[in-house]
Length: 298
Image 1 (tube, rainbow, N blue to C red):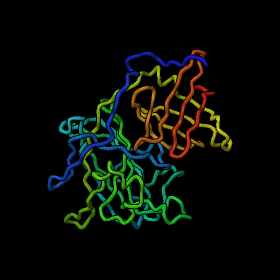
Image 2 (image 1 turned 135 degrees about the horizontal axis):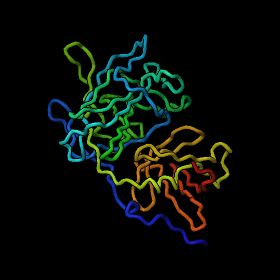
Image 3 (image 1 turned 90 degrees about the horizontal axis):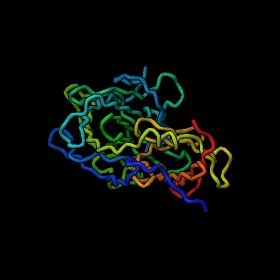
Image 4 (image 1 turned 45 degrees about the vertical axis):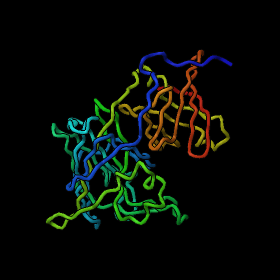
């Protein structure tokens, strides 16, 4: 067997990045003093959401919601300027806009010097991840992705107190999600409000050279259907996105020892660079593990 190796650079030192953090209620809003915890990307992420903060769809009958907060540096005190925050969620009919050019219930903005963000949207609703399964209910939630030049990018979700489906959802009921189950309040105009302050973590970025080595299309050695044998890895800032059947299914951060992990620790992908130039990826999904070899470089 050929000896496997990877780029021997300081950027590949092993790091251990905790997924746990804390958001505390100070009597008025949630305040973080440790990094905000990650969550799964979910199957409906679309890059390129328009920069707009009012994302209430035209003619929507959903309940208006104001989502706001401050994005902080890793110390939990210094506002993070020029961070980009994207949010996306379903509408009042349990639907995600996955195809239209309008990017309904999807939006993005950049923070100013104060680190503040705000969106006006509608309350998402629970829905079945599998229409044929009564045990697949997901509680109402909003997805967030935060990208910062100076901190580790974050992919997470927020949930809402009192949702009857939190206990039956693996992500929402996980211990690291407890501080992201938020209270919905009502302001003087009888409008719903949620405040969620975000603390980013220190980043340990890989070099551009390493990302260039691992980006591309990989073919699995497992006997899956043809469409499920092809995995794609593409870099966006310091997140490595994994795609299956052309769909974004996970956002991975580097955790050391040639390995990347998604929210809540899965999927986990370990890359190996062989002397003959081939790159292989060991991909641990929820129930299976596959090996895939790169066959197309960008």
